[in-house]
Image 1 (cartoon, rainbow, N blue to C red):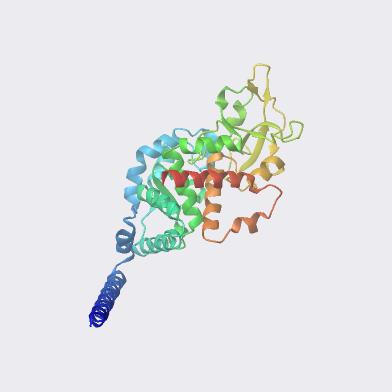
Image 2: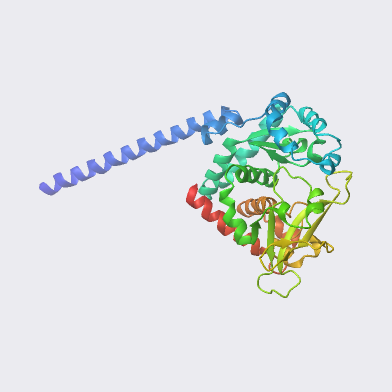
Length: 362
C-alpha cells in the first residue's frame, strides 16, 4: 500500500513540475513576443536608447559653427602661410570665417541611416566581442557628429575637440572603417597616455623638432593635421641592422611641395634621416629627403604608405580600421596591400596592445 502512495505522490509531483515548466515557458514566450512587438514599433533612435543606452548627438550647421568657434581658433592659430594657402585663404581670420560657413544640416533621413548603421554594427559585435562593444559604447557617447562642406580640410573626415566631422557622402553611405578611424582620434586626444606605450613599442620617440638644427625650413612646410598636430616625433628604423639603409632615426612627415601649395594634397610624404653628435643631439645636414614609398623598413613594418600613414596618430587610426575589418570578418587590408614581407609586424603590435587595453579597462 505504501508503494502505491509513494508512486502517486511522485506522479503528482512530476505533473506539477511539468505544468509549471509549461506555464513559465508560455510566459517567457509571451514576454518575447511582447518585447518583439514593442521593438518593432520603436524608431531606430529609440531602439539604440533602449537596447544600448545611447543617444547620438547630431549637430546642425549653426550648432557646429557655434561650437567650433573656440576649438577651431586653437587649430587655426597653428597655421602659417603655406598651410593657409593650401586651404585656399590668405589669413587666419579668413580661415575662421570659412569654418563658420563650412557645415550642413544633417537631415532626419540621414540621422536615421546613421542610427541604423550603429545598430547593425552593435548587433555584430555585442555578444561576440563584449569588451570591444563596451569600448565603442564609451566613445560614441562622447562624440557629436557634424556634416562638412567639401571645402573644409580638403573634404577629408577629421576631428576637432569631441566633434567628428564627416564628409556629406558618409551620412548617406556610412563607412564603418572611417567611423572607427575618427573615434580613435577622439580617444587619442582625450586620453593620449593610453597610446604612448604603443608608439614607443613601434619605435617612435617624442622630441621637440624645433630644437633640431637644420629642420626649420622643413617644419615651415609641414602640413598641419587636426588629428596629429605635433610634428615632434622621430622613428627609429631597422633596429636589427644598424648598417642597413633604413637604420637610425627618421623624421616622417607630409611636406608641401612648395611655399605656395595649391591644395592640401600638394604634399610629399618623406623621411628625413637624423644625424647625432657625440652628446646625442640630433641634427639634419640638409641631405635629400627619402620618399616614404622607398623607405623599405618603414613600409614593411607599417604596411604601406597611404596618404595618412606618416604620423603615429594616423597609423594607429588606420590600424583601428583594420581591427574592425577583422572583427567583422572582412580584412580588406590584406587584399589592398598584399602580403609584404613583415607588413603585419606593426599591426600585430597594435592588436596585442589594443586587446590588452580593452580587456583591462573596458
